[in-house]
Structure formats: structure tokens, C-alpha cells
Amino acid sequence: MKEVLLAYASMSGNTEAIADVIEEVLIEKKLAVHRLEVFDLTPEDIRNFDHIILGSYTWGDGELPDEFLDFYDEMDDIDFSQKKVAVFGSGDMSYDIFCGAVDLLEEKVQSQGGSLMTAGLKVELAPYGEDVEKCKAYACSIVKEIKKK
Ligand SMILES: Cc1cc2nc3c(=O)[nH]c(=O)nc-3n(C[C@H](O)[C@H](O)[C@H](O)COP(=O)(O)O)c2cc1C
Image: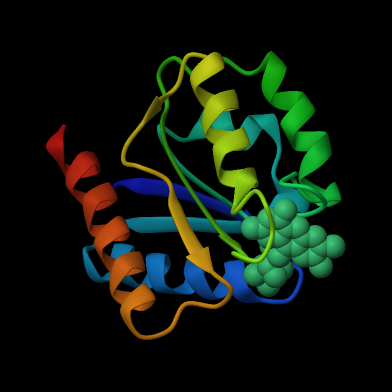
């Protein structure tokens, strides 16, 4: 089984609910998922996986939440050149910068040499209805990329 790292930050559960949908699809497609919260994520974890999915809600004014900041800084010293990454997050459209954390993480990954497996997934609050289908389609496009090799 191919392994995927799935790490995320979620304060009130919305981003976690997206992670649940993604994980379900990956497992259904026979991929082994190593799932953890960003608090527990280390640079070593990144080195151990070729395929990485990062999730975060957005805080402040289109920013990353506090619990992501240490790791975001650590990313400056990680070589992502062999890494294929996908980013997702939950936000709220009533804010000026919807899901800005997704853009920040994508930019950081790319600036560290990583490539993106698929376009970032931005979900309004908790996924339900059509958004669940969007999450599943996002997960399927990741599976396709992983199985390409
Ligand atoms: C103080 C505060 C600031 C926020 N700033 C933004 C923002 O700039 N952009 C955005 O899209 N959402 C923003 N949000 C909304 C959260 O990202 C949204 O509620 C999200 O679903 C929370 O995800 P979680 O349940 O995984 O913690 C903000 C929420 C709070 C409470």
C-alpha cells in the first residue's frame, strides 16, 4: 500500500470534517493514510512521505492559525523538491480573504520546491451537500496522481 501523510489544523471541527471525507476516499482506494494534527507534525514526517496533504482553517485576516505557525516557519528548512503536496481548508466567505491559509501553504510548498498534486480545496465552513462531493472529487484527483507512478 502507498502511504499518504494527512496533517491538518482544526479548531471547531470543520477542517477536520473535510479531512474525514478525504481520508475515507483514500482508504476506499486502498491507500494507507498517516493522519495527524499539525501540533504533532514534524519535519521528519515530511521527509518520510512523498505524498502529503495539508489542511488548515483560516484565522485573523486571511492568516494561518497559531497552531500552524511553528511548522510554517520550519518549512523554510525543508526540501520539498521530491514532494507532491495538496492543500485544503475551511473558511468563511464573509471574511475578505476566503481560505487565505490554503494560498499561504501552497505558496510556501512551491517556494520550497514542492509540486502541487491538484488545485487547493476551499470549503465554506463544514462540508455538506455539494461540498462533500467537491471534497470527494478533490481526494479522487489526489488518488489519481499517487497511482500515476
Ligand atoms: C477570529 C476569526 C478570524 C477568521 N478569519 C478568517 C479569514 O480571514 N478568512 C476565512 O476564510 N475565514 C476566517 N475565519 C473563519 C474560519 O476559518 C472558519 O470558521 C472555519 O470553518 C473554522 O474551521 P475549523 O472548524 O476547522 O476550526 C475566521 C474565524 C475567526 C473566529
